[in-house]
Image 1: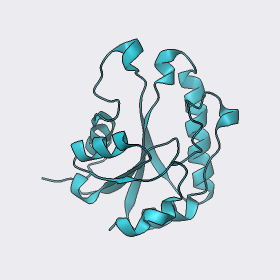
Image 2: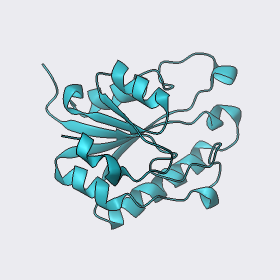
Image 3: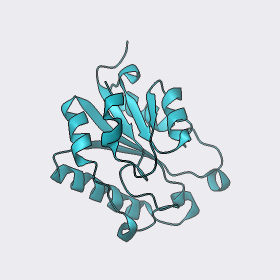
Length: 163
């Protein structure tokens, strides 16, 4: 039986915050993009908003879980000030060169499957917006419709692709 909720999963870097070309390692470099109205519209349409992000910099020791937590808290708080609730953050802390293979690093669907299970989501009514091919592959593997955007492209430009 499919889940009762629908969601839009969101990649982080290049979708919710500015793409830096490499890992965002400290809060000073974390620049939030203005997708407030677009995400508010999706929320008003009944979608849960969930973040799914690879954070291989953790495995590399480039930043700590604590610093990552600060970035996600800033993201959540900033969106809340605009009436948008980012329901949850799912991240892969692994990197193949440091931690070997895992089930959660995109293009694998582990992060999305975790969110689908936790929030009783119907993948067939859900989407994944990302700026990399691996995001679309992960979405497809999880049964979710992937939407590929350019890095830092406004989400408002793809709203018409979401039912």
